[in-house]
Length: 410
View (cartoon, one colour):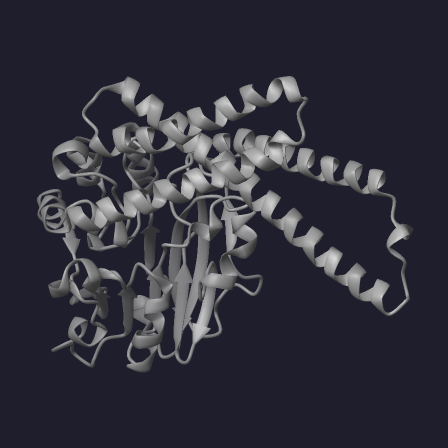
C-alpha cells in the first residue's frame, strides 16, 4: 500500500507540474511582459504548496497551522483545476475552429482573410480572463457552501410488496464525509446532532468517512458514538478507507458502536416486520486488499427470504450492476461521486459515473446516490450541495409525486 501511494504521489506531482506549466504558458500571454516572472513565481509556489499541503494534512498531528496550510493548498488546487478545465475547453474550441475554417477555406466557402486576427486575439483574451474570474467566484462562493451544515434531503422509496409494518421506515444516509485536515471533530459533531434531531430508524454511512489513520483522526471521528437511532448505525467501506488503514478503522468504528458490514448482512425486526440491511466493500477494494473483494453474493449468504425489504450499502454506484443481477435487493445506497462537487466537474460527472446523482432504477432495484455529506480535497461546493439524506420506505404507488424534496438544515 505504501508503494502504491508513493507511485500515485509521484504521478500526481508530475501531472501537477505539467498542468502548471501549461497554465503558465496560457496565463503568461495575458499579462504584461514585466509581470510574467511574478506569474511564473506564483505558479512555482503552487507547485510546492499543493503537494506539501496535502502531505501535511495526511500526516496530521502537527497542529492547526498544518491544517490551515492544508486548507490553503486544497483551495489552490480547486482553483487551479477549474482554470485548467476552462483553458483546455478554450483550446479545444480554438483548434476545432481552426480545423473547420481550414476545411471551409479549402472548398472555397470562407477565405482565411475573413476573420480579423486582432479581434480573435481580443476574444481569446476575454475568454481566458472569464475563466479566471469564474474560478474566483466558484472558490469564494463554494467555500461558504462547503463549510455549512449539509442540507437535509427527503426521498420516498416505493417498494413493491412492502409490508405495512415497514411503511414509513426512515433511513438517514451519510456519505463521503472525509474527516481529515479540513473536516474535524466539530464539523462531524454538527452532523451527528442534526441526525439525532431527525430521529431515524437507522443510520447508514456509505463509505469515505475518513482521510487519515486512526492514530491521527480517531479523536475527530469520536462523535459517531453519539449517533442515536432505533436500530443503530451501519457502515460500508469506501475507497478512502483503504488508503487510511481499513482494518484498523473497522475495529475503531465497532468500538464506537457502528456496525461495519463487510460483505455481510443483518436482519432487523421493526414493528413486526423484517428489514435486511447488507453491505459490500468498496468496488475497488480487491486492488488494495484482496481479502476485501466486493461480493454481493457473499453479503446475502444465508439471508432469510421472508423479509419485507432489502437494502444494500455500496459506496460506489457502479456496484449496482452486480447487485441488481441477483434480483434480491429493493434499494442500493451509494455515494462516491460527490455530484461532481463543484463546477465544471458537476456538469461532467454523469459522463463518467453511472447513476451519478439522486434516484435511479436498474431492473427491479432502486439506486440512490448521495452527493456526500462533507467534501474531499478543495473546501468547495458549487452547484452540488452536500446532503444528509432521509430515505423513507413506502408502499409502491405512495411515493411523493413531485419526487425528492430538499430543506435547509441549520
